[in-house]
Image (cartoon, rainbow, N blue to C red; front, side, top):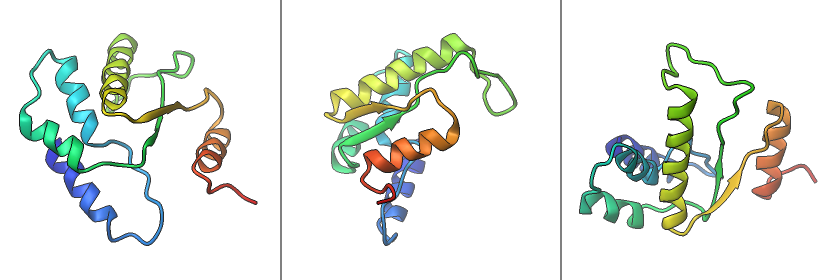
Length: 121
C-alpha cells in the first residue's frame, strides 16, 4: 500500500494543476492501527516527508447508501472502524479533516471544489 501511495504522490508532481487523491500515505498508518499492528519507522517518516495539502476531504460511512459488492467487501461496522482509524491518522499528522456532506454526487463535487477554492466564480 505504501509503495502505491508514494508512486501516486510522485506522479502527481508532474501534473500542472491541483490533484485530488483517493488515498494517501497516512491511510497506511490508519490501516495498520485498524489491524492492531505497529507502524514501522519508515512509514512514519514517509507520512511526514510526503505530505499533502493540509485540508483533507474525508467521506464518512453513509448507512443509507452503503452496499457490499465485489470491490467493497467490508461490512458497515468494518467501514466505520476503518473510517475512524484513517481519520485519526490524518488528524494526528496535523491535517484539517473536512467530512463530505451526505448528499448527491453533484453537491459533494461542488462542496469539494468550493472548499478547495476551485468553484465557479
